[in-house]
Image (cartoon, rainbow, N blue to C red; front, side, top):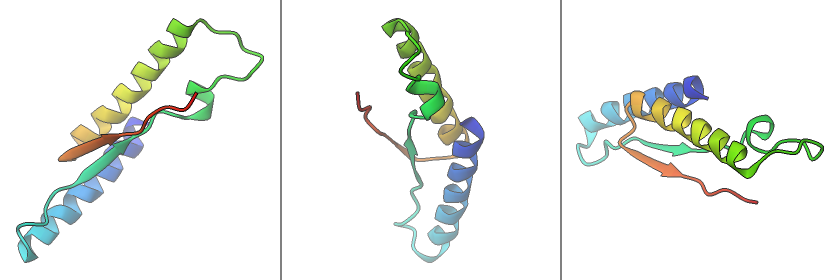
Length: 84
């Protein structure tokens, strides 16, 4: 997840920097953090997990996504909410 978010933020940062030359007011790059990979966050119905274990996975997944966006140069990061 880090690599995908980092690459997306890097592209957005490059585009924002390029547009700044034309219009200095339009230079912010934004990223969106999602941590809902089916295999990581929503385990199969047959798998019984403790709520704390699932929470720990969510924290790790969001942390990885946020780090990728920040390292890629995102000025603003939006976070999606989780559906239960």
